[in-house]
Length: 326
Length: 292
Figure 1 (cartoon, chains in turn yellow, orange):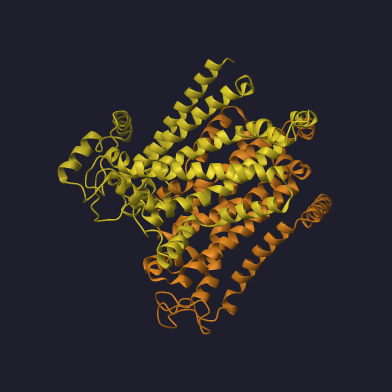
Figure 2 (cartoon, rainbow over the protein chains, first blue to last red):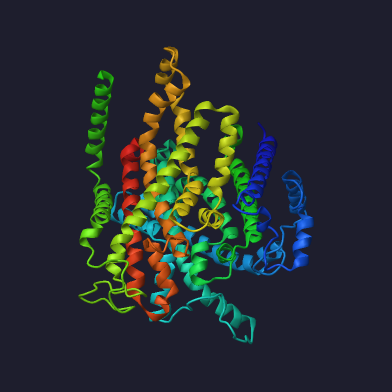
């Protein structure tokens, strides 16, 4: 199987999965108890003419099959319906834009920092496996895995927000402040980002650490490592040129998985810190029963998952030829 | 009767073998001790709580004192008693939800792996899609559809969290069904169901059992968050629910640390108990890891 054929196959399978998700999304929100049109149009927060418009556009008075076709058509036009909580603003506008940017900045930087720290610690621990430092790092990562993320946020707010007054307690920027320059704005924004970012880095670090450590330990058992040692190469060369490169392979799929968080946001962290991102939007939509927005986010998440995994598969095949011929 | 006796003896030998190796892991014993401690706490709750956790017994937001070692909450209820009772709710939801999700996942994985072909393709496509969706938002969406309450929290967690065990069960089944003993069973005329039940399930079980510990950790953490944002049942407060009340009554902006710190520590320690156990089981059950 050549590279092109491999890519084509993966693309086709991604498309089929995406279609399945659309079907799932369509039915999940229509099997709810009560009137199914309630989740799309029948909400007091919409104007009567908006409700009529939605009813017509999504064919809500027609049989389910017709509704599904119309749903597909509208989806490909980029029409995901109207938000309830924002009184008729199109769902696409609610999701894209400001909130997505906030989540991108927070999640992107947190994941990057957690990756670098986790992978470095993982490499050191794997090299000195069985040492006290290694065991301490394992316990540390098991502890961080077991901490509820939202509670970690609450602790940071209590200690660094309330007692020490170093970080703001909530929000993305200070409300009611006029900024003189862009830099003032940026500084305030970053100041608000410290709390959620620290929370996220801690919650991600242990996972990255354990994965990197185990991946390296697997590589250490390979014959080419023995060869490298027998050749008398320096520890540094062995560790970073021979071991780390190969151990990075499994990390590609981890990164692909984490791309999803760029779109879903960190629901727990964003909720505790009221960071105005997509995670908070999910929470607010659940509390305010804004089903159209939830459906929209579901589709966006699925699209992100599938794209990220498709890219990861292609990258895998590029760096490791065994996969495409396997 | 004789068959049963023989099987019991095999089982006993397996258990004692397992225990002999597991005993050498200090970390594993610590994890087991934590879990058993919590189970004891849950069972003994009515006998060791100083106050009725559902009654106001003092003023609201009282600081820790000899009468109330962990202070009181927004309604003047004794927080220590609430925490002890919360063990029951959190432990029960964590165990039930993970049990259901692991059962669903294992069944899906066994069927997909054993029968292969189109069944496998369809089931695995579903699994792969779900496994990569962020779990919390997905659970939130399900809870918002199902409504509040403990039962719905259990359902939402199970419906979302089954995918990892499906993957594990499938890959194990795929390798097991090619082994000589399965071939032998087939040669003497055993049916599909019999092979699955008698030869594959017993070999899949130990690995799934180790994984189940991580499923419990995830379920406990998910439950605490779903309760924290107010989807729990206020009449049976879990630790997450207590934190919900804390957050609602402004505990963080007023510095009521005794309302915020202990419930989280309870969640963390219980989760850690299962996480450590999982880690040690991995070392014990996976000979490759032991050798490394």
